[in-house]
Image 1 (cartoon, rainbow, N blue to C red):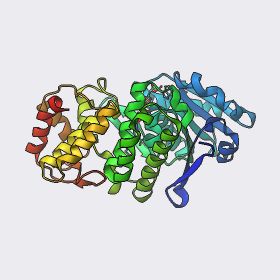
Image 2 (tube, rainbow, N blue to C red):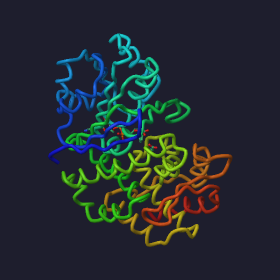
Image 3 (tube, protein in one colour):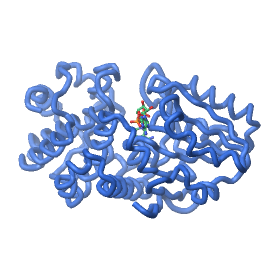
Image 4 (cartoon, rainbow, N blue to C red):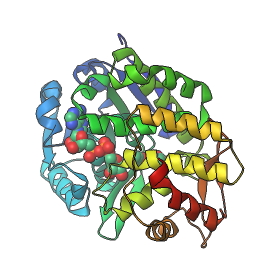
Amino acid sequence: MNRPVRIEVGSGERAYPVWVGSGLLAAEDLIEPLLRGRQLLLVSNETVMPLFGERLDWLRRRREVAIEVLPDGEAHKTLETAARLFAALARLGAQRDAAVLALGGGVVSDVAGFAASVWMRGIDFLVLPTTLLAQVDAAIGGKTAVNLPEGKNLVGSFHPPRAVCCDLDTLRTLPEREYRAGLAEVVKYAAIRDAEFFTWLETSAEALLAREASALAEAVLRSVSHKAEIVTRDERERGERALLNFGHTFGHALEAAGGYRELLHGEAVAIGMRWAARLSERLGLASREHTLRLDRLLGRLGLGLSAPSHSPEVLSAHLRLDKKARSGRLRFILWRGIGEAFLAEGVDVAAVEAVLGEAPGTL
Ligand code: NAD
Ligand code: GLY
């Protein structure tokens, strides 16, 4: 990809660009104009900083830069880490025009974004996402969060970034498992609203697995465009944004049942999407042909080939606790087929439990 592509998210004061391209970390001319004040807190982690930190050396030429390198892992997406970032901002003497810049995956951007959203009631936040999942999902849409012992993402805010720069080159070093987990979110956009994109993914699966530059650029661009369109219309998840949870209600239940140690988020979502398709079929909403196409595509991407065996009762209990269950009624994102997802309220519990019962053996 020779020139970066700009995709606009949001409108009015909350609008921001997402740039997608190669070599963006070193693109001083692109990033520099986005910084308003002199002070900058760069937040990364112990895995990502050694890989890409040097590419941002130019930042120091004109700014006062503090760097916080966090330990790696979801276990550090906490209030304690946010407090560490507040202390760093205080040492920096960060004023209202200071910025927080996140370099890393969704864990880094969620906690750094949260810190930026509450420091002096909100300062600029820029994201340089380095995982596929963060480029196509976590970095876009303004959701920030930290976890509590009581649950994931329980404390957070909506704080749109000032800009997001997706440097496709960073995806080269991503471990295979993380890369494939990110592909699950790419498939999700096609599954919920773009049948043509789904067909493209079917023809491009091998190129994507090989991380061929043009296929990767196309997949990221199309995914970012879908997320941008949805969050522009529904930032606060009052309607359409809920479609992004296709496969997630089941996925969250699987993640929670496994204590968040068995599966990566995208892996759980892949199984969840297969279950959502089966549930749609069982309820007479979609035909088997669509389930099979989803199964085949995910299978070729090495996703959801087996599910950890938790009993339907345990999974069902987690489903009821999910934040998408309102007033005891189960809410799911289901589909009428590829590209046609919708929010279904009051889904029949027996049908859900039947799907949970059959799934591990048939995936
Ligand atoms: P992650 O941030 O844990 O990154 C995955 C792993 O890859 C980590 O070990 C990380 O250090 C490493 N890594 C990152 N970039 C790398 C690179 N270029 N090369 C080599 N290794 C690299 O996980 P993730 O999947 O990016 O994000 C998951 C988090 O995102 C979860 O906390 C989830 O709740 C959150 N999330 C937020 C949103 C949102 O809208 N805010 C949406 C989806 C997910
Ligand atoms: N990842 C779901 C959302 O951003 O709403």
